[in-house]
Image 1 (cartoon, helix red, strand yellow):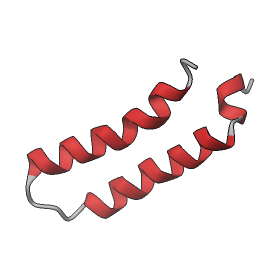
Image 2 (cartoon, one colour; image 1 turned 90 degrees about the vertical axis):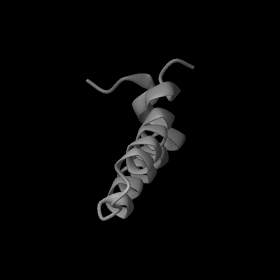
Image 3 (cartoon, one colour; image 1 turned 120 degrees about the vertical axis):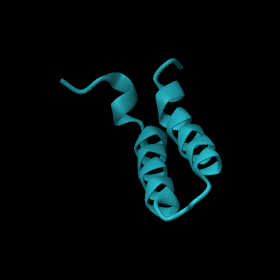
Image 4 (spheres, one colour; image 1 turned 60 degrees about the vertical axis):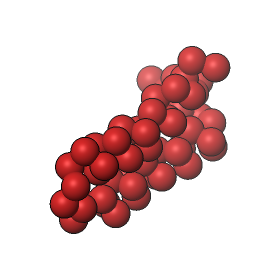
Length: 51
């Protein structure tokens, strides 16, 4: 079953962006910075379903 927000192009694009951020940050040595950036990238698709 596909939920309504999963049909939104903006949600799909934000999921791809989040995956790209994770891939780009894999070699970053500063764990705090990497974690903050990846969390912020993940928060975008996570918050779309509320609207």
